[in-house]
Image 1 (cartoon, rainbow, N blue to C red):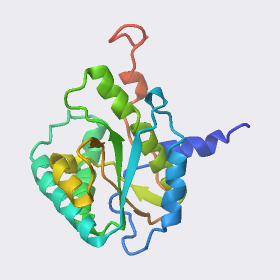
Image 2 (spheres, rainbow, N blue to C red; image 1 turned 90 degrees about the horizontal axis):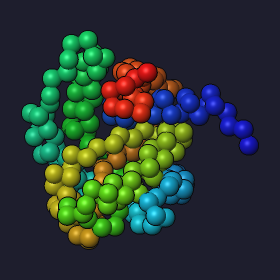
Image 3 (cartoon, one colour; image 1 turned 60 degrees about the vertical axis):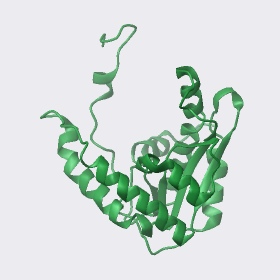
Image 4 (cartoon, rainbow, N blue to C red; image 1 turned 135 degrees about the horizontal axis):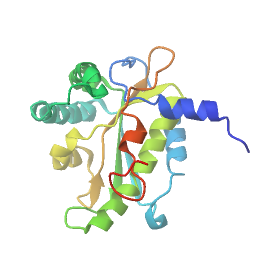
Length: 216
């Protein structure tokens, strides 16, 4: 089967972190989330372990609890921003990113669905290769989830700030201490028709061939 590359490339280059263009009043159907999760678990996983879990949170009180943890972490994170060199395309985007991130912080409790991708095991004392395997077994599935959501008119954003308070989040949701939370993804239908590719440093400037620093 030959894929429609134009459609595939458009999906891959326009799946944004959506923070402001979200319809916080429109319910998200459980069936849509379940369908996207079935797609997500087709992603590759280290050693075919398939030890992923997805915590879907729709309960208003629990969403509010997670939102409070996110707000506390955001206030710390906001003081940690590093300067971006002048002329870097990220510098132009940062005011919009900060504005949208602040908006999301203020409205996090209104997100109709929150999804926490989890993986069995802990990484704290694992060797580097094991840490890479653990995260590499959940992150592809989480990205596939975000792509599947985007294709169905839903926006999402990869966030990880709540992990500053992972134990408190686990208590709210009853997550065992043998499980690693990897992100907190708010989900809602997005507004507007489409998204544009983001301005990025060209890949050729970040790519080396055979030896670090060698671009040719």
